[in-house]
Image 1 (cartoon, rainbow, N blue to C red):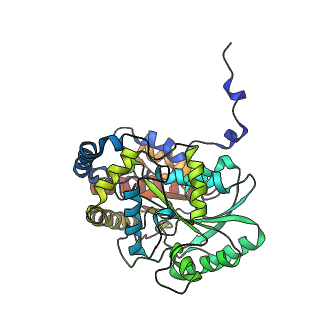
Image 2 (tube, rainbow, N blue to C red):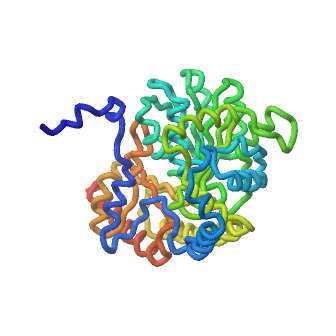
Length: 412
């Protein structure tokens, strides 16, 4: 008699769900659909030749090492390169503060394993990154969502949330946030660090997009502000409240699945233990290829190219929104990253608009999945990095036509 597997699932599986975006990407594989849905880099910009050359070097010169098991903490030359690279942003640490993970998504899952007990309160921005919600859902947390505006998370409301609940940590994407594209202002960053210190509350700083800035000056990371808050120096080593996450997925290529966490040694050690039970270590081969590709200044040169191309696509999408979207729609104007966040007039539900848009061969992500406690029915996320300029022009015109039809039907 065949086992009825559903009766054997752990209770935590009831909290698991498929990623709304991953499910949506199946739809966008339909022929001729212009997709603004996934947060994907432009594949035509992947450094294929550089990765090929790096792969050949790794296999020819260090093949036996590349194809062998490695240390859980990560490939040492790669960790040393990460330490050197992040110093330009004021982050000072040693390799003992760095854990290489299989994408930032694994880093989020390890944080869940190490820090979250069932019923814990987690503070997030509203809206917040869907991948974090999905990673942490099986651990059974409760979300305290704090509204955001054009300066990022509202720190007046943040302190109210902290006072009202015994939260486990604050989770934030401070640069060009996913999904909103908003960057937290310097003033609010300092408020977040001050509040975290005052209430002894850890911060999870998720920064996959920080290098993709198209205008303005780089904002000081929270991990740096926290370190300087504890010691009056410009080159303070991290010791305090912040875990800092970043990745090669948006700057090199996502297929290698190489990311990292930076934090106090005691926390990194505990995450290493959790990772040993998950996958032993991130692919040695992938780490070595990432290192060989990125080193020698190549990554800096490649990022400059990405900034130029993505900046032009952002500008084009913003101008087309201004030209074609109906009155009553508003949107963010991100200084970097991959996303524009759109608010439609009340009465429109983007989950109901999406099928109409797909009929017209254009897709986006409805905003509701980014609200862990519900809401955002009239919002949508648009990605501008993955589509060619001509696709952006055609797609925005199609989407504008769908919205105008929906508004007419609502008002009529």
